[in-house]
Length: 167
Image (cartoon, rainbow, N blue to C red; front, side, top):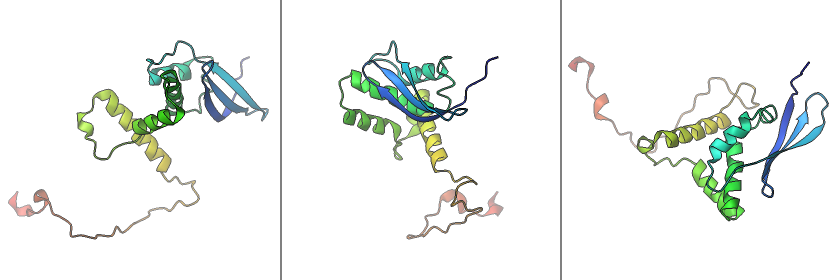
């Protein structure tokens, strides 16, 4: 009888030489901390990080261990590896990842292709989840109303100034 092992991910990192994802996890049954080394094969400086992350996360050998590790975190680790393979320093790679994972509020998302738009939406969803107040949070307030200060006079738009009897 096969019993699915429950493990709680504690830390996830990358080793450059030889390339591997290293997961520190705790066995839920025994409470012991363990380390799992997942070798990265067939990854070059030209590889797609998101595809590599998906393949590793869906790999039957590692699937149970990586359940609690987000796909975004695995993509980031693969980006570090790709930067290393390109000969970039860690600081350069971190700066590049920061640029790729932040949303510019001035950017016109209508001009992006489907893949880039999906990437931006996933970043926004992750940010929303991170900032969302849940019922279990200690400083959660139900039905919070906030007054926003109005420094300048509101500009009216043409579409909302006409009266209802003109229709």
